[in-house]
Image 1 (cartoon, rainbow, N blue to C red):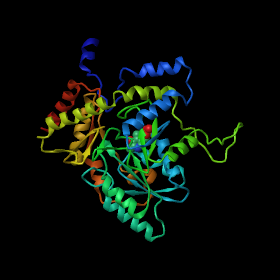
Image 2 (cartoon, rainbow, N blue to C red; image 1 turned 90 degrees about the vertical axis):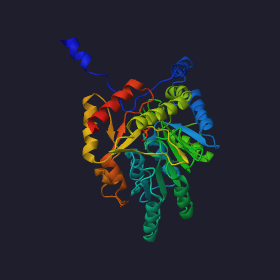
Image 3 (cartoon, rainbow, N blue to C red; image 1 turned 45 degrees about the vertical axis):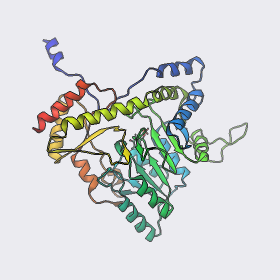
Length: 381
Ligand SMILES: *Cc1c(COP(=O)(O)O)cnc(C)c1O
């Protein structure tokens, strides 16, 4: 009887789980063999130069303990401090916005446009004009390539230039995506990557700060290693952090860099397959790529006709041991941020109501995808 029960429970399909290649363990072993277990060493600098080569454009990379840490240091390096206002995409994960508050600054949320689901250039400009008219010109703009889809780089950066407000480009979900052929993570005054367990590649936990300005890299490393002055004893004239990436974890990162292109291909294949199999259903739509953009399709997302249909499918998947997730709940609706200023037009609220992220890992089998597709078709037809 036990055996019968067991065969009925299908194996779990995760939303986005870690996917190791063949080289990770040998880089980690090398760290052990050479006793480079500290948060510095050859894997850290090797991982940084791998990322610099991959991103190109002459950028400089500092490997850190998380994407959140990179956003915190990035905002600090852009001069954000107590009482400052920082414009931030509302439709994102909370880690884009939380570091604004670590610095005693105030987030001002900006809604998305429908074409990429990222920051609306019109609302961004309206927000800047409004805040400047009250003598509160924002100190920085945090803009996100959500789910791997690039934001409208030309439009957003033209506004940043026009009003002379620097950009922190949150590319945590977009390593491997491109805009007009150029890699995401190379557009901002400072950009941020994440290597958390569910991202396109992972170091278990980790992140990076990227900048065309090498002083930002040097200062990020200085602040990330407790801001020690140049002296034989421990002396500090600035408040520091403990945010450097460990040499053991950077070994995983070096191995993952060898398979990054494959991981992007696999995620894009997932999306293509879902689209090919489901596009004929009347009550769902996909987020298409504008012609100047390539998304890494970190997560494959679909929009349903209504909240009720979305929930029906999400629960049907759950009952079959398949993890899916509503799109990010906008920051301006979050209890922690509900008293902050926001410039919205209902776009992200609607996406949150009707959207669902489907299982998207680069390690999904065709059989896994078929199981997901079957449930969606069966529930909607
Ligand atoms: C994952 C993520 C972060 C934070 O990265 P961690 O490495 O998890 O700290 C920031 N922004 C976005 C959009 C993310 O998805």
